[in-house]
Length: 406
Image 1 (cartoon, rainbow, N blue to C red):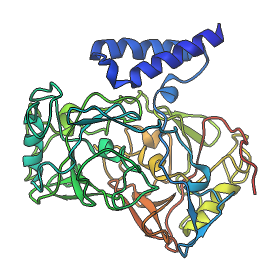
Image 2: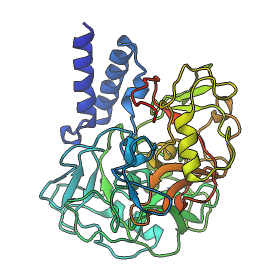
Image 3: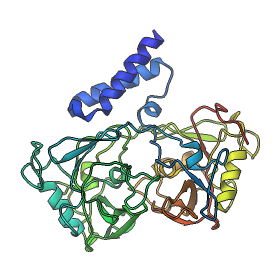
């Protein structure tokens, strides 16, 4: 019976992931409920199964000077390669002016620079009015099918094993610029600005909405690999809150995989599970103070149950790691700030600093630097590996000691 249930679960998850099935919203909800029922029957957390964090794409390791090193046992992103594997091939050219990302189920305009540089308001309007017959499209789409992507949808394209542009090798898109691309997500703490993605080396940052940047429309519901951002408000370019209807903003459409409620579960052993991703985080988000990147990697590699006050989860050396860039970003709620964590975080974590936290992900185009995130408002940027930042270890749902400590 368990084998039958597991097989059914995999088929349902595959159907939810497959954009080509054109599952309507009501049927998607039915499928999601069936997934949850089967997951519970198998003794698993349905939300953990539904929304695993994809790999970053990084496969190499570098030291603090930017020299490539073997990396085995280092705990670097290129060593562990944690996350859900990408399909091969990653993209499918539909032959109608669109490309489908087989990892996320999202469909993108084949031409990544069809509109040049436009303001944020122009980008929203252009995307909302895009349809078949424009910009090489013969996909049957109508006005309203396309949208400006959320910051998480843009982020889902990024391959941290590439640079200039930072997209997976062999992608079928035309005219991808190593430049700045708008998202539909406003900066909640200062809504005259909106989030953007730089496709040169990959930071997620923000810019004034009145400035001109590039845009890349997307359509489709996507799947469990792209969660919602958490944004629920809408603002105009002057930062004034406005009616959401017809805006195409993230706060109106709220596209992406829904979050479980409650989002977090206290394990009673010094750890908390994020029920959206299945990742387990140390409850104390500042157990080690500021450390350089190498120190942070080593600290996480050595962490185990009983090694610090309050950690009694039975974990062993090698179970914990410094999170990669996708893992740290998965905690961000783009509707909140100071810190930018989901509602209820303060019931499950303590000592969270609205400041800078290291990731295990190096910058492919400048490997003496590594990515970090600022949990004040959420940007993922980079700094010299010799700089000190905070450290927040993560591990998989169950300590498996799958990697020997070295």
